Length: 188
Image (cartoon, rainbow, N blue to C red; front, side, top):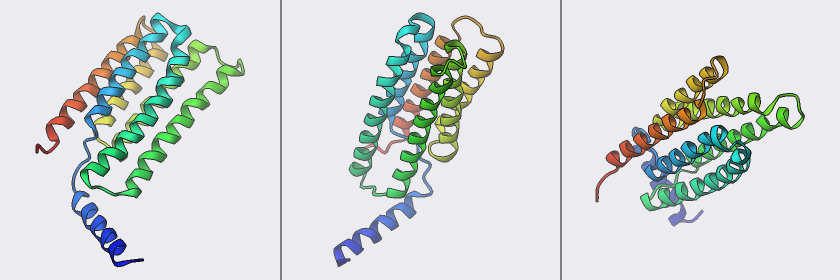
């Protein structure tokens, strides 16, 4: 290891130690992106159920890849090189993606009707966001808890337009988180 590499590693360590007391508030653009994607996508089962699956396949993968790119770019611009944190984010969301894909299995095999199986996606999303709020960014906890409450409502009561109301509520919560993150960003 050269002196320059060692110095870079030392500076990254010091930078991470100084920032470890900071509560990550997230990237505002990602809150706005996912708030929009969730609001639109959650309304699809109520208004256009046939395109809900393809929408989430494209929006989920595309949004995930864009989120990864934007997160890496934002970290570079802020001078942060915390590969451990990046791996933690990556693993969290990759495992979430695997959970979403596994929700398809009972529906594909015919063991669960699509209307019933679709609720499982909301359960996985609620757990994913709530745990991200515990381990990564606090605002995601509240969005996840809203999704879990909506899951309980959907399963127990099945009111009309539950998906749309859930999407609008979670989208608004993510937008509020994005506005809060904008306010917490240091101004140049």
